[in-house]
Length: 211
Length: 211
Length: 211
Image (cartoon, rainbow over the protein chains, first blue to last red):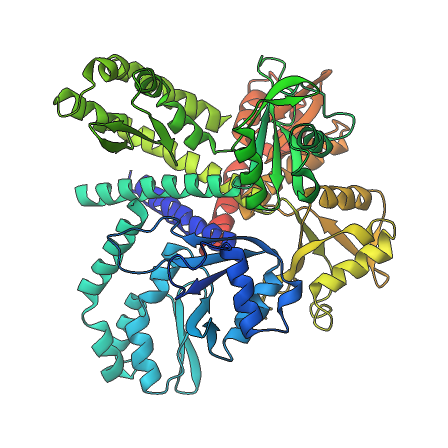
């Protein structure tokens, strides 16, 4: 009985992981445009808005780029939400996405002169997993440990001449607690209010998915 | 223990919902052609059959439309089934699908003079969820409550000057039972044989997925 | 309680099947190139390597084929693994994939004169399911029962003038045990060490998915 339970737990977890992978895979050719005022795309459509952004910021890239679809996400403005939705652009070629986002990392991006951001598009789960590292990421960066977030939601940083990689906070916390891994002052500060944070993260995720 | 059970139930449900969303997303650029005789596509392929339909019905739309793939679904004729399979056409651009289906709502569609239908393509789950509203939809329409089916499988209708939206029958039934919501005679008739209908729907779905 | 358990088991299984179907669907337009040395794609990219292969082997097919993306999979060389990764090419049109793989079945494929293979791309689950038939497939082929592997992971073979199809070993084993179905000497040999094989298959799959 216990074994069945364990196996079922494993299968459930595997399904969740596959789902996350597939959700990310489907978004692989997408670019998120963050910061464009609601309604700007009304007149000419989101696709031509994207093309304007490319023309304004990367005049050399624009001509050959094929857009599969582009739309505000979520589609309908929620008056209760105060945040502005992103525009999600699906390109035909993965290569185009990578060229654009690569170029976008080198400079400030604008639309009609206003600052905007271009970003990858992840599933809600992957996004939350990455966000869960935010505080630790900042602590490590401030102390110059050169942290990086790896796909899907791992953190890596330089420590003692090596690159350490962690997939979840618990593991990192354990090692910090056992003093196998300093920088304790930094990480502890970020890791101790674990319980509330973990729960908040979990609830936020559930809410998002159950909407 | 009970909490683990509840959480697991929640996770299972979340997986089912994600799966349905993904299944629908994959079908987003698809059009279903309903009513074309089995075998009609044998000679020139399903793609050129689709292009004939466009040329016959929407001579202005046809030229720029790119088809990713087109095939009879299911692929092989089941001699035991008496229904004819649909032809599923996957377009390259979401926009093209919407233009075609939008135009198809305005007129009768024919193939070589015979009436056919063009329709969106949903996952089996979403389709069943929408079908489950059929009886209530008809009752409401007959009484002029202007019902609509919303994505993925909600019903909305005008009642008492407001638009009411329901995601499942149980909720709607509760409100009808509590007399918070008339039109009781109409809805009751549709909602009372709930048990058998629910079960039939569920079994049909299981069978379809386990084939 | 028991009924809830059973229903949950059914739902879990249905999710697994849907996931496998979706994973395969996403890979539908893919071709795997097997046997190209690691690093060969470094200079000009995996896409142009694929185009070289097409030009070298199918000079008549090449011009119209559009590639959506192409990359070594897995992306990074694992020094611990001794096997060479495949190159996965995603085509824009399903039809192109079928034409190429159809032509590839008729002749030896080479890249710069070295033998390579072109193959369909399945999810890890489907691939494992198909591999699980390997031993039985070989036994049946050696005795001229004309076995075939059907999608996703079924075996069929000619027996006693009919075509028999099986989706899992247990069913096939039962029938062999009950002597309803010879060829017993052949199948028994393959089916008896069932327990160890089944478990090995299961563990291999788990490991692959949990990486």
